[in-house]
Length: 529
Image (cartoon, rainbow, N blue to C red; front, top):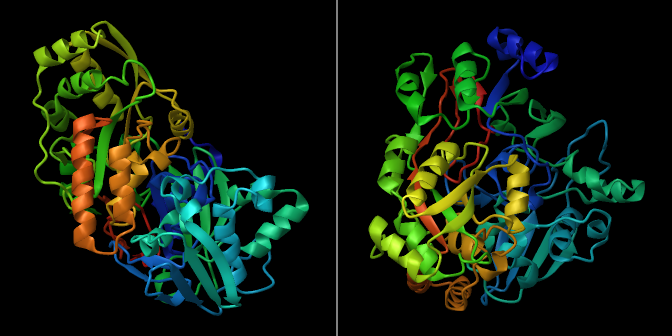
C-alpha cells in the first residue's frame, strides 16, 4: 500500500528507474513536513532545508559544510571603526524566481534588503499588519531592538546602523532567518490582500524554484534557470519525499527510491556502512540534546526540584540505548568544539537517594508532571520516544510520575513556546559558530517565549551574555561566556544529555554533498553520476 498517495507513488517508481537520474533529479528522503516557507518565522532545520537552503539567498552565506562566511547577495562590505555601521555593496544582475504566481519585472536590489529587514524589526510595518507573524531568531537575539536603521544608500548599496556592538552580526546575517525576500512580490501580495501567501508560495533568488507542496508527502522544486551561481546548480529537479519513519527512509534508500536520507537510526549504521551501493560520511555533531524544565511551573521553579530531576537521569544508559555509540555525553549548554566551552564544569553525580532527599526537602516528593517527547528524529536526538521512556523510568525511581506527551512537530514547538509543558525533550544544532547562538538563543531573557523552552531568565546570566555580545575581543568574550556557563550549571534550567555524531547515508551516485556542520541539508553544488 502506498502511504503517500498515487502522485508520490508514481514519482518513486520513476526514481527507482533511470528516467529521473538521466534528468538529474535528486530525491531527498526528509524527516518531516515544514511548517511553512518563510524562513524568518522558524527555528528548525526541517523548515530551513525546505526554504532557506533551496529557495533563498542571504547577504552573506556560510561556506558549504563550514562556519566561515563568504559573500552572498552582497559582493563586499565595510564595517565602521566603532563596529556600529555595516555598509553592503550588492551584487548586480541577480534574478528572482519566475513562477505561475509571480513574474518579476526587475532584478534584486536594495529595496529587497530594506523590505526584508524592516519587516523583521518593525512590528508596525504594513506587511506585519497584513500578515502577523513572530520572528523568533530576531527577537531571541535582540536584533529587533539593536538594528536602529536599514537604509538604501543607492540601488545597490545598503547601510545597517546598530545601537550596540554585536560581535556576531555578520554571522547572524548568514543564518537562514536572514533570507532576502522580494519587495516587489510582497507589494503584489499586499495589494491583492494575500500577504499570508509569502509563507506558502515563496519567491527568492536561490538555486531552486518552489513548485508544489503536499503536506506529509512531497515538496517539488525546479532548478532556477537564471541562478547567479551557475557552477553550483548541477541538478534539474529536487524532490523532498517526506518520510518521518527512519526505517522507511532506509528502505527507500536501499531500493533507490531516494538518493539521500536524513537522520539514520543508529541501529542501522553498520548495515549501511557495509552496503557497497551506499556511502556514509560522518563527522562530529555541532549539536546538543537536552531536557528543559519549565521554571514558570511549580514546583519546577525550585532549584532543589530541578537538581533532583537532573541527578536522577542515567545519561550513560541513554547514550548506550538511544545513541548506540553515535554520541557523547553532554555537560555544558554547548558542544565542546564551540570556542569558549568551559572545560572545568562537571555533572552532578547520578544519585537516586540524594535526588529523593532533595525532592523531600522541596516538599515535592509526590510529583506529577508532563514530559514532552518530540514526534520527529532530530540531529541531536535519534529516538525521542525511547529517551522519554527511559527518563520516565529514571524519575519513577525517585517517586516522580512523568506522563509522556507528544504533538505534531509544528504544534509541539508552538505549544512549548507558549509554556504549556512541564518538562520536554528538545535540542539545538549550532547556526553560526558563535557562543551567543547557544547561550543567548536558548537561555537568554530575550528568548523567553521563543527558543528558551525553560522560560528561564536569570539576571546574572543575562548580564554576562549581553556584555559578551557587545565585545569584539574574542578572548574577553570567551571569559564572559565561561562565567555564564557556571551560572547555568548552578541553576539547572535544563539537563544536557548528549551531542550526537552526524552520519549522512546516500547513494554512491551522489557527488558533492557536504554534511552541514550547522545541521542543514544543502543541495547546491550537488550532482548525480
